[in-house]
Length: 195
Image (cartoon, rainbow, N blue to C red; front, side, top):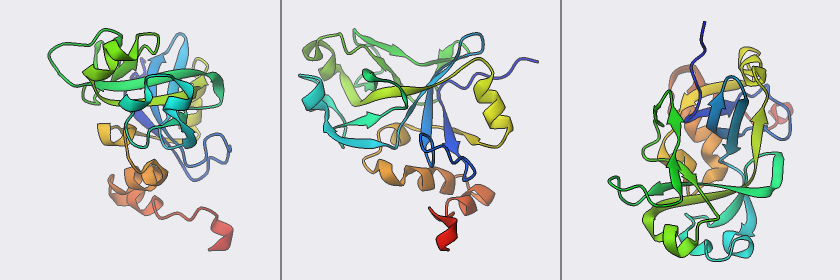
């Protein structure tokens, strides 16, 4: 049986996921290819380093907070950027949409930004921009095994999740809006031993 592709969806760490790289993380799946594995970025880990300190010319286009985000433990010396075009009619040069089952992501207009494109060419064509240092990666079937083990909730994403001005509280907010049992999970204490 074919598994549905996860591109454009969120992976929200369950409270049982203790790996410090992913504890209480919210990961947007950027590319899910069942033959090659899965790539995502953690969208709730801002750093203290301004985008402008790392990528000349891009700082003025970055969404608040305009800092680099720790996208994951893999390739931390490389940058990956996500953006939403200012116009839904014309895709700006240097931007490509996330694709899910041959269609655009459920996240309205979200795509990958080529940081090699001069910022003066692409930057003004973006409504939102987030830059990540590193990414999260899983080998073929590795992520599905983690989901089956109960390490991740797979949930729909919104633009507000990816470009949140308050990313530190995103884990609780995403769970709370699901209602039911997941809303209850959103109140799970950081350290249950202190409860």
